[in-house]
Length: 257
Image (cartoon, rainbow, N blue to C red):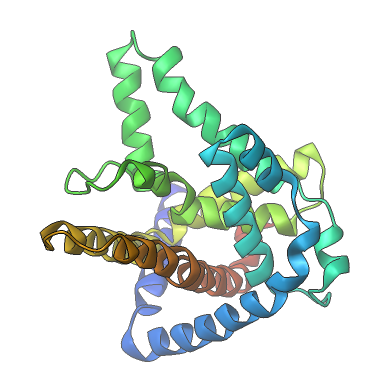
């Protein structure tokens, strides 16, 4: 049994690396550009999707705003037989609130329950590094970027996509998390490399402003606009297209009969 799982894992990892080969990567990038365009074609109809956005603005909570943003992009990027107009966005989804509560718990656990247990705290941070790809010592940026590794790690994006594709019941929403972890494990090389490319772009942009002498404030504003309106949507589009491919290729792995 264990040997069979290892063989499946090795095959899946090899396939995930093949997806980054030049020819297949080019197709994914073209699909991502198409999805990127579709995101901005559907967003004008998303005015009926306030939930966590309003709560985040009222409470001044950055985590809520990021929760809203990532679910907004995922809903716009995911394939749907339904036309993505106002009626599509009216459907309630618990994904943004689940994501916010998860972020809150994730940040609170080491401060409240594990601070007196160094072994458990070390395990906690190790799991974060493995699954959320956090903790790279070379990364240092502005304080506002501190939450980005959680919300834009591949695990979070595919978790949101699984939640959006699941029925709105506690059981199915819980299963969505374990399906996302399974996809993360079986496609780890692809997600690791794609996420590190994102981090290099973010850190590269930040370091560029630090080496410039007295950069104009508008340059910082331009950087934030490019990050949140171009780089992150393209990245979510890229991960979404890979998610769709792997669900199709490995359907029984995530949705067991």
